[in-house]
Image (tube, rainbow, N blue to C red; front, side, top):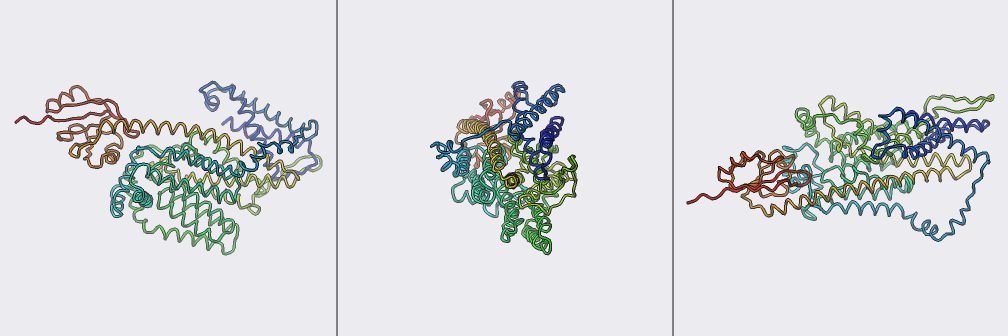
Length: 616
């Protein structure tokens, strides 16, 4: 907390020093906010770079802050020094004490620069999209499914009516994803890579949306944020491939929110797209239903606030159509809610910090994306709400506080506010529901909502560049926009480095599980139909995983005494004791122990039991 306070207060120093030698210049709210934001980013960057050398290897900066009061003082001193260096450098440049000129024409004439400007920059976002697609596709060719994924695969192989039976008796999710998965199975075959493909297609569709619609509306650099995060964030790498409904729900929420932005811009057809994508999300996952409903409501309110008059009618109609479209599944939703309130597998409430980490790309990227999301949102709201005004009168500088107003809000500010309110509203709903029904929120349930966060960040980046453009127009300078783009490119470079590390880590885990699973399946070979499979409490193994890998064999949940079969494979968390082995040997069984093995992400100790035939 101390670091946050220092990080917010110390950048005021260069702002005050700048004001001291520009006494006759009027400073508007937008200019003040942008200057403060720029100082904050620069001071934080300088001080963070310096503090890297003050941290022990293996000890993070935040751990130092928590454990060492003296380290907090060091951090404050470095922040102050960074602020003074920033202010001093700006004074030298603005007061012409130091003049720096670059002959850009010489640089532009270099063949490498010409090639990059002509070919690489225009194609940059497409190359990035292709690169992240290839990385994700490289992970799809395995034969590994964990418990819920195996459930999805087993369900998709049933008939159309059989799927509904499974959902009625065994599952609590809406049906859309299972039919989507069945479509891919029917077209390309029921194999694990095809199941992964069913999730990769929505991911790829999202990238197409980014390099077309997002790029056209918000620019290359903001659109690149969506491509980078959705392709390389640790949470996205996992759910882009997972054989569950999260990738489909993620696409639906991203497209729904983009349609919401088009609605706020005055688009008429966008109402239809917004409701349609909201229904797709709602029929994919229940938390997408909540997010989509809140997004529609907030969009309708914002649309009315902006356009007044009879604008409320369109919003009301969209909400009614959405509700009517979900009526066929409403009864099942209510019965599921009742059953969940009485019996659900969770026992602990998900901490808010973990929720925010999931919403902002996972453990590594969230350290950049969460502060960036909040800071950009605050800058947009403060700059366009006319909240305060700095004036110079009678030799004194005064700050005039106004009542905040939305009259000057641009399309991007409205959309950013709608996105933020959707995120806040969904989290509030989820935690209130947990208080009323018990813990019913897992990290992965928030993945569809993270699409709203990512698109909001794209919109915020566009809004910040727009503010810098207006500031540069007022000053008749181009450098504010160029500087803003340069900062965003640096952030993208940092995210890219984190993303490559995420890919390497996740790829290594995928390969390890693939190898372990292949060894187990190779050892067991073709299991005859009469051989039973007994799982002694190994998580998810007896529920879905064994049924997926050995669909012709009977799966029994229990210990070695749960079956009287002559031959069976036994999966147990721990080694059998000698007395247990002697007991089964006395019953005529020969026992082969294979030690510690693994299927998917589930380790176990494997035994094979075979009873000797009775002598005539």
